[in-house]
Length: 101
Image 1 (cartoon, rainbow, N blue to C red):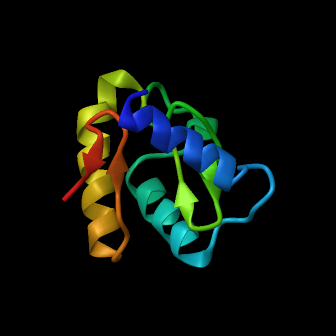
Image 2 (image 1 turned 120 degrees about the vertical axis):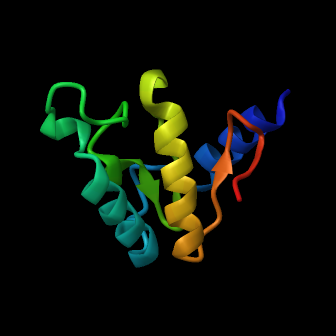
C-alpha cells in the first residue's frame, strides 16, 4: 500500500469527518483559503479549486483533508501549503507523499 493511501486510511479512521467539529486553528485556515478562492458551493464559473464543499465540511478536529480540481491543483496546493506554514500548521500532500515546506 502506498504511503499516501495509508495516510488517507489513518485519517479517515482516526477522525470521522461527520463526527468531529474542526478546531479553531483549522477553521481559521479554511477562512484564509476561502478569502482567496470561493467555496465550490458558491459556484462562480470555475473560480474554485476545491472539488467538494463546503470546504469546512472536509475538516475534522485538528485535520482537514480536501480534494482539489486537477486543473487548479498545482497553484492551490502551493498556496494552501504556504498558508499552513504561515499559520504554524503542517501540510501533508498525499499526491507528493510528503510534508509540504
